[in-house]
Length: 226
Image 1 (spheres, rainbow, N blue to C red):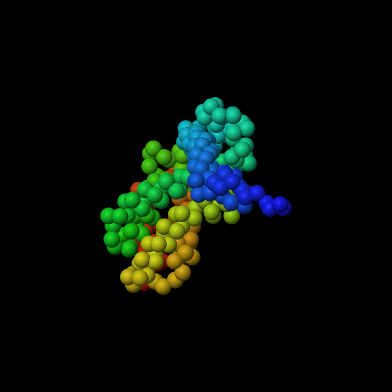
Image 2 (cartoon, helix red, strand yellow; image 1 turned 90 degrees about the vertical axis):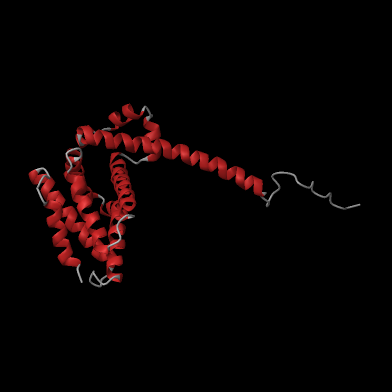
């Protein structure tokens, strides 16, 4: 009399206790949901990249993005605050893809200065290519606008590229071919120089200048060499 009944052993959903299978089940559902959200987010970013490349930022409207993706306005605003945040996502994705490609190609390069040269010249040649010149001009204008309107967000977007430059500079310092300095600060200076040069070239002469990549590399080399 007065004894409490024992709780059933093995009953799912006991308060204060989560079984391993329950955690795994929840994790699978959440991961599947995350992938669905990201898949649609990527569709918006891919559509924006295509519109900018074909029509410039004048053609990047919410209506055009929705038509190209076949997704709803509600789906867009569930993922982005507005057009500007979508543009920042475009910047970040383009740079992320470029850095991934650079890293893959750098696997075949050992010399630290050759690695640094490859990254710098690739940045220039990518903007000068016939296939990407219109896109590069549009992105250059928007880059300058965002540097004033959303400087912190823009810095976050370009961080992967700055980190890649810093890694090459750090390797050069370890080998004694790059002057001692804070690799991250030096990388930011190099990136700013390359970006400013590209902005000037793209917005005044259309970005095509023979030997521009080599000349910019030589200037950077003199600035960082030990």
